[in-house]
Length: 114
View 1 (spheres, rainbow, N blue to C red):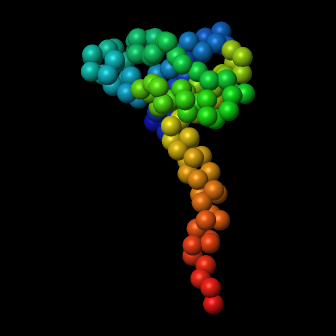
View 2: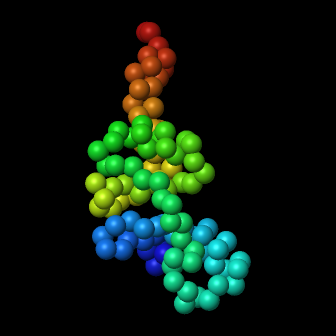
View 3: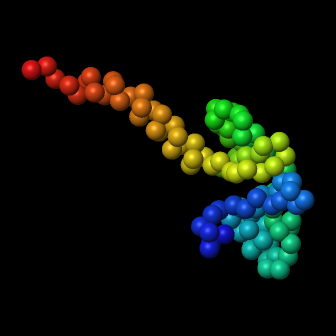
C-alpha cells in the first residue's frame, strides 16, 4: 500500500470480490490487536463489501456513500471488479460541476457596464 500510495486494497478470489482491506483495518484489526504480520488478509479485511455497478450514474455512488461510514466504493461490471471510487473522487467531480454551473453567473456579476 505504501509503495503504490493507496489506502485500500480490494481482495479478489477466483475473480470475485471477497473483501476490502484499508489502512485503518490494518491498524485497528491488525496492529492494535498485535496480529502476526504474516496473518492472512482475511483476518483484517471487511468481507461484507458494498459495491456499485459501473453502469450506474455517479449520483447512485453518492447515495450509497451518504448512507454509510466508509469512504471507498468498489465498482463492478456484473461480478468483475473494474475499479474503486472514493469520496475524494466524488468531491472533485462535484466541485468541477459546480464551477461549470457557476461560471456564467460569476461572469455576469464580475462584468461591469462601461
